[in-house]
Amino acid sequence: MAYLSGASGPDVDAVAVALEHAQAALPPVVLTELLSDPKVGESVKDLFTQLPLLEVIDGFWQRAGLLRARLIARGRRARLADTLVAQTCLDHDLSLVTRDADFRHFVRLAGVRLAVGSAND
Image (cartoon, rainbow, N blue to C red; front, side):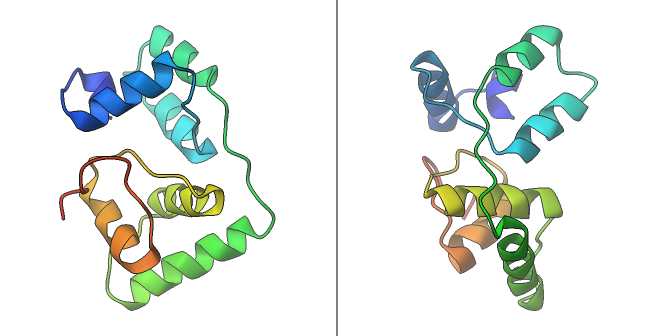
């Protein structure tokens, strides 16, 4: 995550503003990924465990599976965690802040919106 690495850019600024104004929320899988990284410090873990998690809405797992199948059928990369993030954003009608180019397929084929940038179009 660019924000944690000290990078700069509009995506990092968007995360900083969201955190500052208590507007940030996480898909549960993002928190899981963050806590799985042994290099992440305790202060960062504390910060992110205090953020609200986006609710998993009924039918989520089916929609996520079908979304992933649609991308894979078109020969696109669709990692499971990325699919779960994308589906959570779609379910909550939220924009995603990311630099991960793998999300470009979710933008093009599923209508995921990015908050800033272009996920390396």
